[in-house]
Image (cartoon, rainbow over all chains, first blue to last red; front, side, top):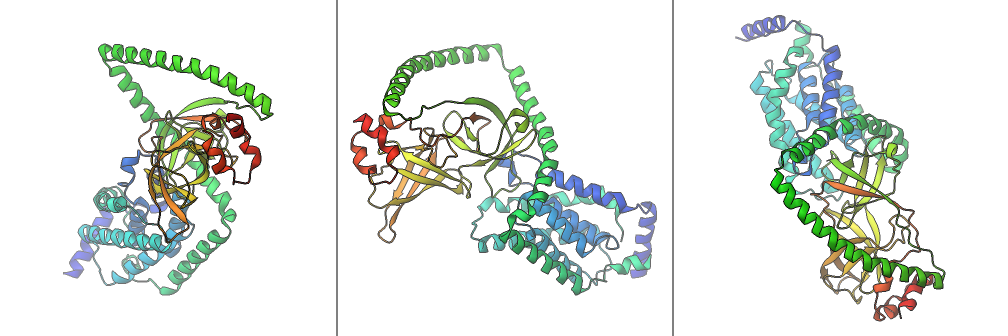
Length: 170
Length: 310
């Protein structure tokens, strides 16, 4: 069964042409940054998905040969700069979250689409809870609509996956 | 091939720990020495500038479309309404011209500087800051239009905020409702001065350090005082909307509702006016009762116009 799945996976990889993510990674980050800072009217602001988190999750889970801890760290610092946060906050959150994800999924041979979607939803939720706690510790009370970006983040994952699937490494 | 599949498992704790510690070190460094990271922040802002310019096109073209699509009847009605409003404003201006002349004469007698109303620039709001916690707007004018950081931004109702970062073709406005914003203000009725802080809530500002015994009422108008040398004096900021005096603290908690449309606005006006700390356009309307009240405050030069009103 397992062998069968692995061979299917390999066939999928061959069909997808074994695309080299050398350029896909920086370009996806560039587009992600643009979407993160693109000016929106106030009522739409809270609904913006966490593009950077989803991107870093995709690359670290599905292209581990290229993207590791320091990639996560770099994207975190970039996110902090884009959002004008204290530098290192997102870097810390991303590194801790992604380490936890890779540790907990170390025995999962198959990362199917639905597995990944579930992981993405869970990671986004945990990220929002951690960020919320961090802001509470810093004395900032977040409004209720802070949680609004959870649903768009979960819904955008299939789109992101469909676009980036070509560069999936494992 | 095999290596790639199992590469997922090769996650060791040590680099992750090192990265997490580096991130914490960065946070501490940024907290203590925020200026170390200014070049990086500046670079990112510069890179965002063309993006903001690009983003302003759909908004501008959307405006153009709605203007084109309006019916002739509606435009006629709007034109009539605007003409009536213009007439009313002109009548009011006649009165103001006379008051202004009188004010100039009185100021001449008192040797205080004149109020100079500077040039204005109308600009369009093209977006908000990506961080929903901050109250920051992005507008489509920048250093190419002669803007510089610190200028006051208004709408037709009152003060909106000040320019914070000025890029080539866009700028960021720190709204008065942002948690990090403070405006030095004056209560119009009594002339009492105070500091108006943002709370992070766009419908509520908080007037700081007002003693429990101070004469302040619901509905009092709040104007800029010009004392911070940031905001020019005499522009409307808000209305006192709630007062709570508790015995447990020395100061009353006073909420002020901003007059300007901080969330819903579309156009803003940027004022080119050197903030003269000494200008006091609204003191003429202060009644004599106010003089004794604010006389306890230290800055005597600012009290002069009160005596003129007596």
